[in-house]
Image (cartoon, rainbow, N blue to C red; front, side, top):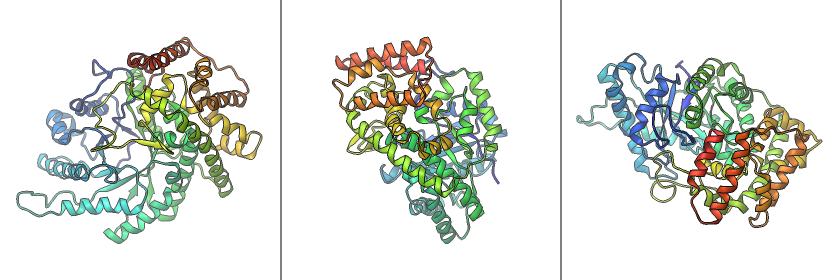
Length: 500
């Protein structure tokens, strides 16, 4: 069995501060090979996600890191000690030629590694975003097998890689909660197509996009269902399951901070790999980051998934539906404001356009929204932590009931996450917004109900939280005056140690 990494460094652009190795926050494509090397050498991570989804990408990454950092990778080999994993462009929403280019990079890397006497193949797994069926998983593997079987003397790939391992990324709460069914069918199809079962599967549950689409509570609960089901599927099938989670720093996107590792590992028992996004790496002290990554690498696998019985699962599904309803109603009403603020969130990576030729946008109901980082940054920047939206009304609806006990049993950090989020709520500003922005009056209700749920416990705010509230007012005023508050948004992001 291959080594399973606990930490997967990603290129998610959620950092507010400059990287420890750079003099500015913006990271160009040409910096990413060094970032990969530094993540392994300086931080101690074991996997790096090379992102082809919706962004510009250096296609010659293996050539570049092998030539530039030859001495390092000669003894710490890609594919054996460290891992480089492509997140593919999904052909459902991005043009297919990008998928072919990613495949050719993998095939070329195999040949280069063999020529240099390195571990072969260096790249052997890919992530398929927005996975919704077993058929599309097999289709990706079939396409790779067909491309790699091309036979021509000039291609010289007869001894290269011919089968690619598939990591399915599940990105909405319904798909996540039912992803074991997709995996079960995938195992059957894999046996039928390739005449063998995979040695393991690394099912990947998103944490940010489902929160954007359904709210924080339904997202956390859907992942708990998935982790319980993966445990059962592993036992039935005999195929090892090593789940991945796409966690980030703010509670809305996962609550994974280098100074709160224990809380995260307790919440997401059963996860074997977590993403380490840019804010985690660059908005905290480097030594703290190194210690946190070391702790994850040594201890994450010790936390075993919690089994959920059928009665509790039924209650959880009804809770998810209730909270999602409240969340979506409000998001549809405030979408115009969110989009307006998000336009001014400073860029951190070279992304291609989100709609049209290369990419896509996200949406809730009838409205389009920014990607999760811009969405989260926009709301925090105007004093509305997205964690609270729909959550207060949901809690009010299930108070003093079995549903509340089930919620607290499986979302163990809910009170902590709400306290952390509420520190950034600018309540006077939100009260003013109720006069001009539809939907904000319900957010005010959420906040009042959350205060009741927390039993009116004191939410201790530090000086930085008070200053953050002051800046959020200035940002809103600049937006109303048709000015760009980009500098203020960046300043607020540094205060909360994450852009979004």
